[in-house]
Length: 162
Image (cartoon, rainbow, N blue to C red):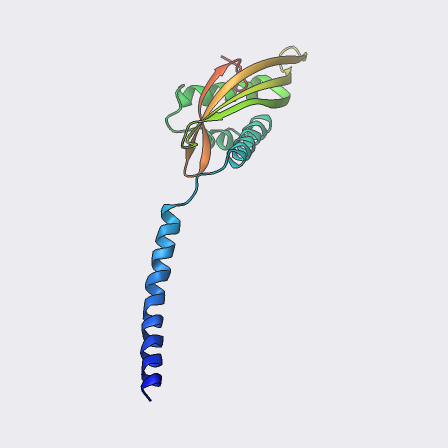
């Protein structure tokens, strides 16, 4: 009979210890969550750039501005005005880009992206088709696990009109 008593006590102790062990394991998993890999970061940047281009080409200013960081280094009102001017001055817009280089800081929070792009559009006033090539550097900041455009340098890819 003593053997059964020890087995019962051991079973009760095990059952009581499992939830505590499980909670500790979940806490450890949360603390040791790995940062996104370079591939995951590059994929997120590509998706954000694709969304920016799509919103720009489809003349959706609200959607475009949803990918701009609140602390955008240029004036976010200025970029909003410029893209809206583009929308009124150009039609049949097409924009294609290639990522040349992508670098991140140690925490994958600030991401620098160098691109080469080709922009073509029809000027509403002259009805001429204009094709331009350029290079630009973007800095994205990760906000709530979503890259947001923080800075643009080089040839303007968006907001050509002044």
